[in-house]
Image 1: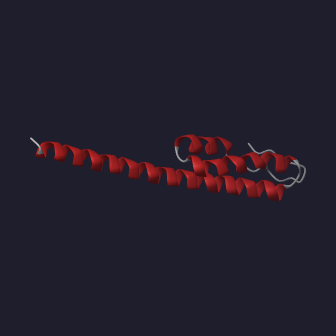
Image 2 (image 1 turned 180 degrees about the horizontal axis):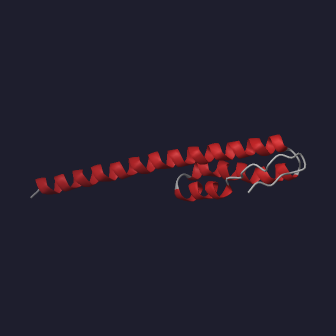
Image 3 (image 1 turned 90 degrees about the horizontal axis):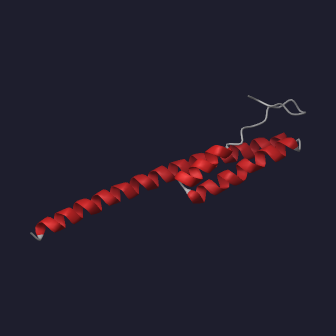
Amino acid sequence: YAAYGAGGNPEPPTYLWQAIVVTVLCCLPFGIPAIVFSTKVKPAYIAGDYAASLEASKKAKMWCIVALIVGLITNILVFALQIVAAVGSAAANQSYQ
């Protein structure tokens, strides 16, 4: 659904739930700016500043994407390092037998 303000412009998406999810599950440092910008969308829209509302929405979306990508890359690297450590540990244990 799209709510329309006094200027006839639809309210931009806040991306708040996405920001919270990427903050909790993916990447805290980059999720925080996503939450901050997402909470600025509605107040700016209600105040009649559509440009600021739209800009906050775009920045919230961008930080959600950044947090998701950085979080996924970090988790993949950590998982790969755990596999390498497990294989190395298994090989070291076998060489002592």
